[in-house]
Length: 249
Image (tube, rainbow, N blue to C red; front, side):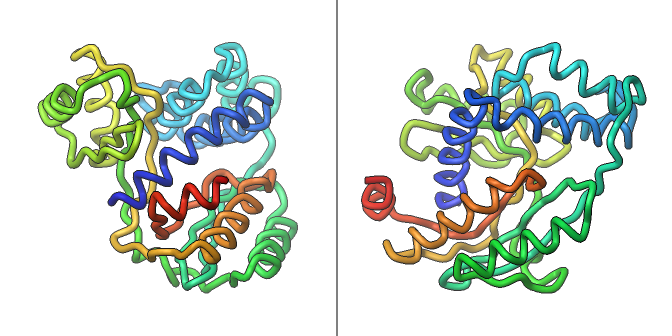
């Protein structure tokens, strides 16, 4: 799962920068509103809302913004009728990609996503084309510069985590989807702060990319994430540290 761990870390760091510019907050608010509308405004009784709120907190979204989004989802102040859609497709070198969208205009989103894939050496697939490659897990990011590996592994194992992966300056703790809150609480009780905790899709197999395909794939992913309607992008690529350094440079 090293490829997924590396990508989770990259996405989190990029998300932090987006959040600083306020770019990410509208997407986080949209996810909160939809979760509250569909499952109620009590996070203790609505797992989707709990996860959406926790993710917003991990990106330092202001408390009042979170509360406002919950209220709007619950019918106070109006709530747009967003629809959840999942697109599946392929990137350079056959990388499998899943795109989760929340939109108020299905036709607009479909045309935009198709256009992005086409412009960046990719192609949309049929429903189910690549979903089988991924599994749903809870993902918790911990700063490896603050905590020792033995401490994180022990605390995560005691809390019921499935796996712990070290990638550079971060640990990724993987859990069963229903155990995300419990494992996070266990880490907190052990004195370990979590930078991010969310549900994610983890690939069962990965595609190793050379520098050229890595550049093309990351451009495609960036373009998808720039779309206002796109909430999450998942892919099954892996990039070596050497190639990642070259691409980043």
